[in-house]
Image (cartoon, rainbow, N blue to C red; front, side, top):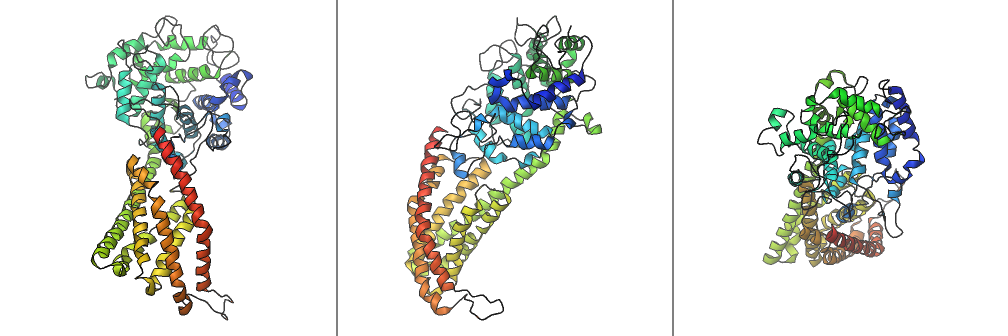
Length: 583
């Protein structure tokens, strides 16, 4: 046997360090899976307690460079998945788009990225999880399965598991429908107790792991065999355990399917299933270890079969993982459901690995939930304010005419519009992705009209343009804030509201802008006559300011700015509505 001398930890560490530094040319065809290969190397070093030999910050920066980010809120509605790409070739952009024209972000690479980041100590709360999870939910199909990418791909248990692991690590389940996912998983259990990758397929060790681990992460399984063997269990546990135990062959190794040779990786896939189910004590652990050591390469790492000569990183990693499940001396324990190790924290090893993972991400999850709650409350509160503005405006118009509209809406108008200042702060601190450079001019111009014109110069409050202004503004904002309020509260907005969000501006933007320009123009004579807000020389600051000419400058900015903004919004409408049909 190649491994008869025992487990060669130092040689394995050297093998993984080499793989992490530079992959042999045989891996060229796996370039699009670079993040997954890195996961094998990093997680392997973690199992071997050798992560201190790598630059964790450098690894974190490298992994983060693969994340895809939406340019703005419009991009979240175009059907793309904003997770992690598998490689640099996945980030090549087409000439006419900022979206990759071939390989895009995918679930497997996203799982690998988050697992690596977690193992090197990166704070997952800094990840743009909102965009990731919103777009991930679009990958889930009507039957509960997941596609790994946003178009034209297979769907099976592998990607259901990836979605569950991603959600678990981020401690946020808004990116998937757990009940639908569970239903799909249960349909994949075969008559013999195992699981196929899709309903009706042959039972397979890897599929069984994906099914059981996903159910465990989603909270549908208990950790005690006496409980999961009960009739109330969603899966046929006794039959699954029997099928899994039958996969251990006479040579001590595990086969992935019936009548197949033993393979290093299935010692983890099938062994992991039994570990989760609490049935690993029924295995012949010594026989498993002997088989694994027979696949140990003298160069470091593990081969697929005992008689193979050259080790590969895939089977090497799962060899280490399987030995970790056997409590091999010198190896870190493994959180089986997630496929990552738990950092050395003394007595915390006495806790269940999944519980430890929950504790580690609890604060990140709390902050994410707090953010969603705050933004939901903000959007719905301002929605109520603008609804009041519209109600009072329409009521006053019908009862007293346009000359009384401003007096009726003054307070709610000022409160609702001034509250928008918080949106600038939201952008500055990263609560939302809207760039401050775009938000500031829009909010600034409205505040100028609200306070600098209407509040400051009562002479123009009775004009008909006040009515058209507040109706245009309030209708626009009622739709906008309800749209974002639903997305924050529920994780999505209905298609009819999406249509209103990107269609009503066709009329309301011109009427609103025309009203703003008209009211500023009407106010110019009163501004010039009042000398309000002007600073004249001489003064101790040696500075002068003329509000009249400032107002003229603002009017001048409207001229080029308004057509540009309208054209931009037309483009966003076309993209959002077209992409929503294919999402």
